[in-house]
Amino acid sequence: MSWWTLIDGGYSMPARRTLGQRLACRAGHWLASRHSGATVHPTCLISPEARIHPREGVISIGEQSSIALGVLLQGSVTIGRRCSVQAYSNIVGYGTADRPDGLITIGDDVRIASHAVIVAGNHRFEDSDRPIRTQGIEFAPITIENDVWIAGRVNITAGVTVGRGSVIGGGSVVTRDIPPYSIAVGVPARVIGHRSAQEQPDSGHK
Image (tube, rainbow, N blue to C red; front, side):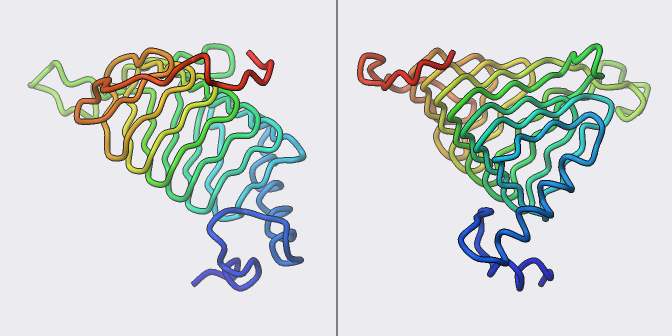
């Protein structure tokens, strides 16, 4: 058991209801924003038990977004406003600040449930005479548009765009683009239904 469990009461998402939770959020915000390549809005709630580092890239987390304990947030990643990333999800972007070849872009109002894996790179393995570890990584950006819900244990692979307003069912592996307002499930994920775009509230954010 970590000391933070005693301090914040063990609540899974960072919060500001108690003094202990407020202290934990302040510590989490400082730990995330101390890196020169990280920009974290003052209203963000960040668990001190998240691992956040821009590596050679840039991390940006928008206002009122929350990052839970155990989240691995690394490399070139942009997260919009009012997003939540639940416990033990892995989000790893690649590239540098000047050349973010493997940038992960997450829009506004996105919900990412626990144990999601979103990685914007794949190991090269074409040469069977060389160890895979020596062949490098091929980067490809990932885009998750506004108002998307990604359920638990979803894997989103490099090069994929998940369209606005979509829902990705638990345990799915997303290997190709998902059109806006789709409901997609399975391994690999396929679209099984659609949400009515006309029924979606428009917050005015693009």
